[in-house]
Amino acid sequence: GGTMEEKRIAAKRAVDYVHDGMIVGLGTGTTAYWAIKKLALKVHEGLNIKAIATSIQSEELARKLGISLISFSDIDEIDITIDGADEVDYNFNLIKGGGGALLREKIVAAASKQLVIVVDQSKLVNRLGLFPLPVEIVKFGHEVTMKNLSKLQCKAKLRMKNEKVFVTDNGNYIVDCHFDSIENPKELHNKINLIPGVVDNGLFVDMADKVIVGYQNGEVKELY
Ligand code: DER
Image (cartoon, rainbow, N blue to C red; front, side, top):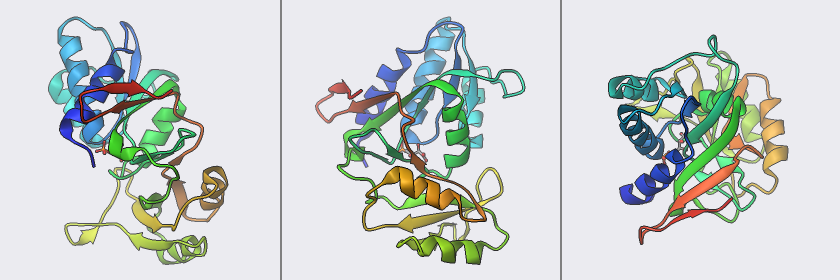
């Protein structure tokens, strides 16, 4: 992964797109962390926003920093979501889910008018799939679900954390699927989501509206 500085400058640039009165989706992960920190700073300088978080972790961080939170019962559309990614290809398709938050991230991203992805340069790839694709599955029958996932030519591994099976904010499991490479993200996304027991997967196809990259030399580029 990239340096903290690369993440921080990308996140800082993304926050420039947040304006007074907006509903903001808060991403999850170490790059999104810097965006939440920068947003909190602007809130303390008078920026008036309400936020929806993509994980309990980001919710707690936002609350601690004094960002006011709302839920989907209060609104039905988000103006802008700022989130990270594990991989970005040249069609701006993403692999997300490294932090295990892909389900809420995809729900929030899909409800957002604008999805701004912030990454350090190490996330840019020619083709998706070097990073194992996270898939959220339900616990019941997970052994069969994993067998069906591996039939898609991947090595399916149940994600562990502290020697226990990792459980998401939604009470589900994550399977990390190691593909050789992903030729057609859209096709694979649809195939995976048809498997009984699969909740969603970390392929975000045709969802990013902007990709902001932080580079070692302090440069920030908006690829899109
Ligand atoms: O889990 C996620 O989807 C995160 O956004 C991840 O993709 C990026 O995390 P990072 O910013 O800590 O690398």
